[in-house]
Length: 158
Ligand code: 5GP
View 1 (cartoon, rainbow, N blue to C red):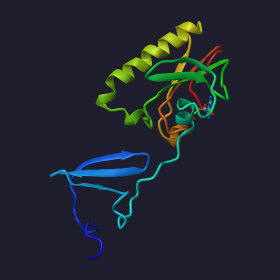
View 2: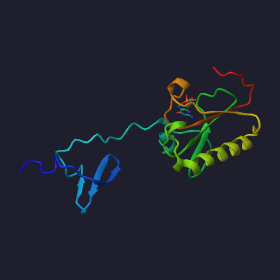
View 3: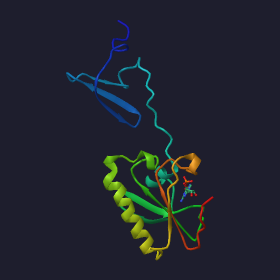
View 4: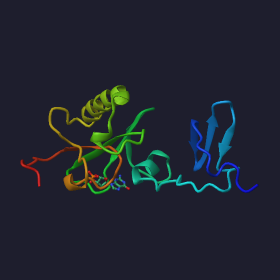
């Protein structure tokens, strides 16, 4: 009888969780990588970014603010007396990956940036940077805003 589903095209709702996937097809038949042993799946647990590990509490950070949607913490290699990173808890790779469904989150991040700069006493006197892509200097593929303050900042940046 061989592998009855190996060459079957299946359309339906897909759920992926912790590397396991399941398709619930029209008619309620259900297929998953638990019972479709003949199927090779490319679904893997991608390596977490350093920021995702901070969000998940797996590595420590000097957190200055957090709420349900975002986190602000001191940069490990500060480029100014005040160097805080503000990140969404949602995994968004960079500025270009923000979509319309993130409208609330995007606005909220700016509200948090205002609060953090006020709390640090540097409102009206800081620089906000988000490097988008490696050529722009992005090294961590998780959207983040650098708040730099506490010294005179030159322009243009390097
Ligand atoms: P990017 O170069 O992507 O714009 O900024 C990444 C920032 O993350 C850098 O300023 C870097 O110093 C900071 N960073 C990298 N790893 C860690 C870490 O483990 N903890 C903290 N607090 N900051 C980090």
